[in-house]
Length: 122
Image (cartoon, rainbow, N blue to C red; front, side, top):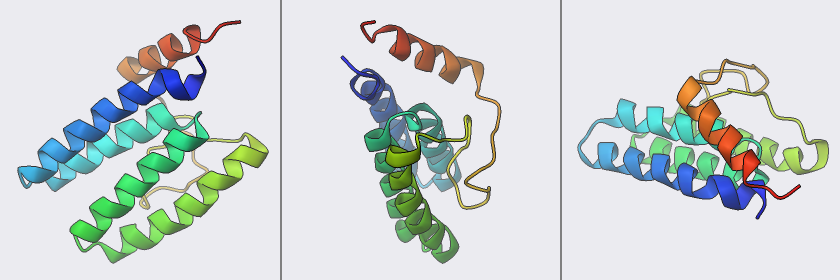
């Protein structure tokens, strides 16, 4: 198992919670859970891109042109991660923050990330 496979169910959980909030009209809480999914997903190129795609759909559905444009830029940027291996830890992925800014990772998410890394055979 690799990190992408190990972290995917946790990213999926956050995305599912986001859609539950979105369906209730709680768009800010929905985006918060997409940001949490992004923090979890950053070290996996496929999951990282996946979170930006969901953030883009959130932006389109809420008619947030600034966020939609920002997510297109971030989707393209996330693809460079494959080449460079660089990601800013803790970055929440929204267009309201620099894509290069590092942030602290919430303790609960850090535990999930560390468990996912521990699942990878050495």
